[in-house]
Length: 437
Ligand SMILES: Cc1cc2nc3c(=O)[nH]c(=O)nc-3n(C[C@H](O)[C@H](O)[C@H](O)COP(=O)(O)OP(=O)(O)OC[C@H]3O[C@@H](n4cnc5c(N)ncnc54)[C@H](O)[C@@H]3O)c2cc1C
Image 1 (cartoon, rainbow, N blue to C red):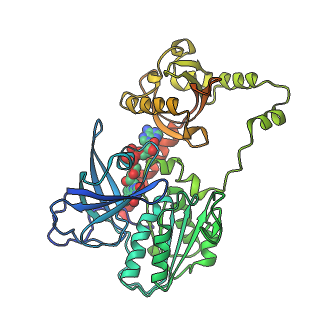
Image 2 (cartoon, rainbow, N blue to C red; image 1 turned 45 degrees about the horizontal axis):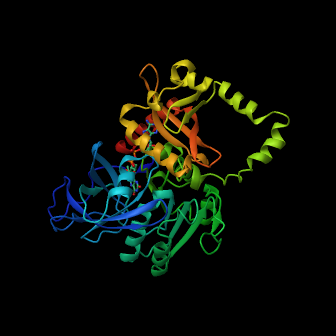
Image 3 (cartoon, rainbow, N blue to C red; image 1 turned 45 degrees about the vertical axis):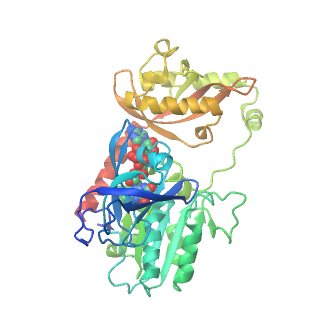
């Protein structure tokens, strides 16, 4: 069994502080990248923080209107300073707490926080090289560990490898560089899976593409280092298994799994972005049409999609009434075309998600912009005619009238219930393994 770190309740006790949640105030917030924002949390009563170690995570309780009290874990992304915590949160496309933090948590707001715990911490004796490997928001514990390494003057050789999509998603770039400069023995390497035009190799990042275990085996001291890995589930699995196969003993493989479901489903900066080869540039539609379709008209192509029972193709007008209902939609949701046409999209949205759905829908109609038309997947729960909840992934295409205003949209929806359940079970198993570790 690999050594993992998602264990609770093992923070060091200190300052006789209570172990349960206590009120904190958001003292400040800071944008670290397009998708990650940090929040500084200070105890409301001014009492000192309990003692904890770099790399551990706290538990935050957020009272969210219409959602009730929500509980989530966030790594403290600084080394302990005795006074405040910093958490650095990735905005999940459809996440309840991360979106609330990004959109609503401003300076002065209070929320409850339980003390940090977890075992993703540096070994007591730092006599071996240390290799830190992160992808996406998995960098948060690494920043804390690096700060700790600099502060405590750890003499070990340290190599930090981080993978992210590009300069827009790259959080803490300058901070990590400064830390590496302060600590003589720290080397940092960055992989961008999809650099933007303005991202310059050698200046902003080191390698384009994905990190492989072969690369680590070549450039990091396999065999005698302590490895710390944090990122999406697939990334952790590949790195940890690969390193183990190359001879790193399990006792020196530490990993932290954050567990948001999008990480397992492959949403945006999770499995797909930092860890997959760059996607080829999209071709203009007209070019694809003449090259691939030959004499077939675009209408015929659209008709074929609607008649297919594979994915559900559902079109709705600007008010959200269903105007097209493909054979795949009949199969997935159980409503016939006759039953669905003219109905509100509410028939396939579970009640608790409707308000949020319509807010997004109205915003999209008004702005004419949707990120889910450019390849990003939206993962949501759905509702069948028989009342059964299912898990869906979809993209949308906006339909615009000649004036350029949104007249409706077409969603291509896939039923991912089986995969979702399987991944949930896998995640549960990982947690169980970890708990028994
Ligand atoms: C030890 C630990 C440390 C962590 N540290 C950090 C950290 O430093 N920074 C950080 O950003 N996060 C961290 N996390 C993750 C964090 O706890 C949250 O899981 C994360 O912020 C997402 O929470 P949320 O409420 O925004 O999303 P949730 O509301 O929990 O939803 C997550 C995603 O799942 C999708 N989803 C929900 N239900 C379904 C369904 N039925 N079908 C399909 N898709 C669905 C949604 O689209 C959403 O995008 C950590 C987690 C752990 C366990």
